Amino acid sequence: MAARKPKTGTAASTNAVDIAMDAAASGTAVDQTARSLLIQQERLIRWQTASEKAGFTLRLLTGAAGLAAALALGWMVWSASQANGVIVESFSVPPALAQRGVTGEVLAAKVMDHLSRMRRVAQSSEPERRVGSGWDTGISVEIPTTGISIGQLDQWLRDKFGHETRVAGELIIGPAGRLALSARSGAVGLLAISGAEAELPVMIERTAEAILKSEQPFVYALYLSRDRATRLDDSLAFARELIASPDRATRALGYHSLGSIMRDTGSSAEARAAFRRAIETDEYSAPGALNNLAILELVQGHPEQSYHLASRYLRILEKGDYYSPEAKHQRRLTGGRSVATLEGDHNLANALYDEFRALTPLGYTDIRVSADAALRTALHDLKGAKARLSQYAPKDGQYHNRAMALADAAEDWPGLLAAAEEASVFQATQPDAGSPQPHVFRALALAKVGRHEEAQAAIDQTGLDCQPCVIVRGKLAETAGKHRLADHWLGQAVKMAPSLPVANYEWGRVLLTRGDAEGALAKAKAANALGPKWGDPLVLWGEALLAQGDERGAVAKFRAADKLATLWGRLHLVWGEALAKQGKAKSATEQWQIAKGLDLTAAERARLTTNLAKGA
Image 1: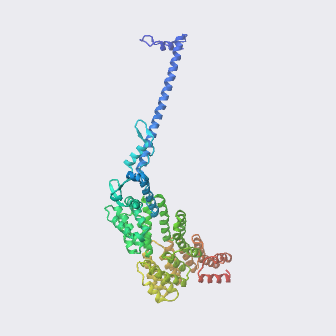
Image 2: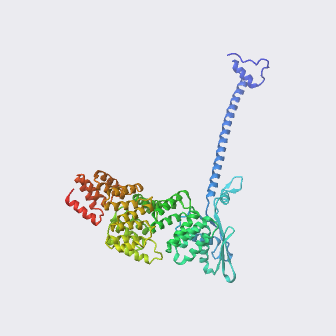
Image 3: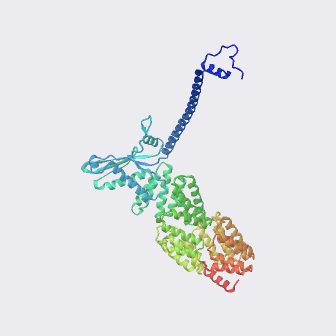
């Protein structure tokens, strides 16, 4: 290896490290001093490298710690922004009362207890605001170099970014030993009440009511509604107070509350008007008005309006945040059930209601039984529907409606007439006549038992805006042999609810009975297009094909219907008849045996007996 030489034009280095390195590079023996110097230099380089690595790691750790602190602070800010509670501060009380145990904390705690109780009584689905005390010390770990505790920082953030309301109050002893209790929300006075010391529990309860009224007005309205027998005037006054508010959302709540009062006191027309005003004012602040109006419209015989309101309600549920997540899910189930029922998808309605039933408290027992009876009737499980209805305790409007629908499905005309007469007697005792259903079912039953003039008089009591009423007008005309008039009324019924399948199906059944298989087939197809998950139009479709001699097509439709209405006796009866015409005796008998174990009308039972006696 060539010896290292000084650069041209420069003097040899006098640096000790350079001398030692030059010696090592030239192969010249390195003295001990130079060797020691090189070793020390190597150690220094190692230390420097390690120091640089440590510094880099420390910077990384410092950066990570800073990021973690920033994330923690960000989370605290976000959490604070979500704070939406009512903080009840310790009340100011006289020392004389505090010595007897009536401290400011005790007084505030009793107010909080009443607020929690009233919320439970109201059974509200509005997102619950946390009720907390204002004397909690919270977390007190100090943040280094600031002298501020984490708890203090959290409280500052809640005050700055949150939506918490702080309620405070004073209890003083006035002249003659009477107590005066006042409360305020921020700078706004809520209540000032006085009374003897023995009246203090009532004063505390009224203070809690004032707080609930101020902070969650709709929950307060619901709370009042649970005791309408004694607090109807309070309910009406508060609803009107809300309606007079300059705030749009508050006015919507007021109209919704007024609608609920009118509905519960039997004034259905006024209730519908109030619910409409709530929706027009701000549907996102009173989404329940959509659902309540949908129910009332259906009761009045307006299924198309009910369908669109219920569908709109579901859309508002998804877009809005009025309800808590749990309550939103429950309402999604009940609203979905209503829409599915109107579309004829009774299996979906049943599944949704099963899920709802599993989530709701036992207090809904009667409502559950009523709904279950209706769903079983729609699915042609008449024995199951009858068993469920027998468990329904109150003989109210719900009971009578279910009983009439069940008798109609069974084609038990004397039973339907008796149920309709009973429903009419009950309805006459109500403040508002309300539903036209008793007139509709009574007219149908009277016609079926041959009392045609009485039937026409009964249906004439109903309005022409009621779709079920118009359908029965068509059926009465058909029974009287007035086919053109029957088609007129049934055509009107189709126009009244163009989104729903019922009118087309009912018209198709009338046409099939008349002997017009082609017309029945067209109506069955139209009904199936509007309600593809409803089994009844498929059975009508199959019967129309069977009447035209298309047994194979009929069997296909009956097989498809079996997936939607497995427990329908008539389905298996006509399915067997189609198979018999195909010459498939064994398969026909199998279907008839299934029908034998299911619900059949008297006429269908006789027809089945004849089929089984003849054999396929």
